Amino acid sequence: MAHDHDHAHPDDHSELGEMDLRVRALETVLTQKGYIDPAALDVLIDTYQTKIGPRNGARVVARAWVDPAFRDWLLQDATAAIASLGYSGRQGEHMVAVANTDSQHHMVVCTLCSCYPWPVLGLPPTWYKSAPYRSRAVKDPRGVLAEFDVRLPASTAIRVWDSTAEVRYLVIPQRPDGTEGWSEEALAELVTRDSMIGTGLARMPEAAP
Amino acid sequence: MSYLSHADLGGRDLPGAIVPEPEGETFHAPWEARALALTLAMGGTGSWNIDASRGARETLPDYAQLSYYQIWLAALEKMMAERLQLQPDELAAGRMLHAPRPVKRVLRAADVPAALARGTATERPATAPARFAPGERVRTRSSAVEHHTRLPGYVQGKVGTIEHLHGMHVFADAHAQGLGEQPQWLYTVVFDGVALWGESAEPGLSVSVDAWESYLEPAA
Image 1 (cartoon, one colour):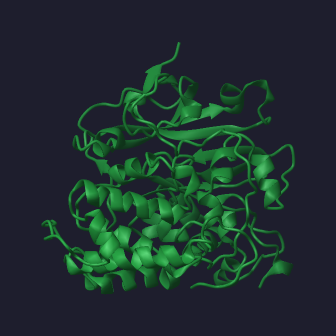
Image 2 (tube, rainbow over the protein chains, first blue to last red; image 1 turned 30 degrees about the vertical axis):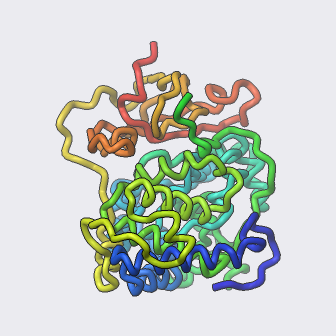
């Protein structure tokens, strides 16, 4: 889990040792008091590291790209459509999907905390929870998009969804040109996490991994 | 004002770059993963609800100085201390020094997948007609409140349009204060960028929030 990376996360490094000790002490006390099952912590962590992440959402988007009936269902009742693929529950109890077009781009934020659709995207990235993103997304979305190297035509209007209640939003990015006849599985590889938040676009076919 | 949220950041010009991050970089230190799991597991004891958790986090005096999981951890310790589930000398000692307080339930490893898949829905059966319909113009509450709320400051006192009705949902403001669920109609309200930021707003910008009915009044 701990690994080198080349950008700064405030406070994390300088206090690593101290934080590790503090959390270990807390876990020990809570276990001794019988409030928690330490094995449950391992299952929770494994779930969000290996089972619930943005590949779930990518499968939802790829299905919507190839199946117009599913896309309609997703836009009408995202909670049910997403559940039909096996994704449901915590922090995705009430889902809404919004589709990008040439004239309308959607972007999701939680200015008040870090609300995020866990069943389809997993845990939010650090920037999504950060003050710069939360403060600027609703006022200067084009400036924010530029930091992700995304530049939209002036003719594309931007809609920002501030997740202030328990409704969670999934952006359906536009399907890239040149992908006619692609399998759902191959299409899902083009769907990035950021494209489902609205801070990115789907990969172009030549950039497929 | 006695209630002050440090988490209401929308529209403020805060410095700092937005640093993109690769997928799969879920935690940046082992303790972050444990802090997340401890928070979810203690949430599973039913000692508080998610709205109370948000209230505990946003009122941390040093919120702006803490990293995200430090905020979660500090709020967890605060909520447990308030309930005498954990006392400061125990954290310092790294072991139990006081008898446990009973909790409603314990989240067992075997129950985790089902608990996560179930989640905690907040929609409740409609017990009253909705006051507003799609297309209606509404003005948001303009005054601050002395408790946790989910109406961001940047939309306070602004005029927007009802776009969607989400049914009746547990009212976060009441729920956070331990006053029960008090469900209300929940609406997506959309605002023109100009209504929020004036003429300098990005052309074509619109911003929506999800707002409970009591946040809203009809706009002339």
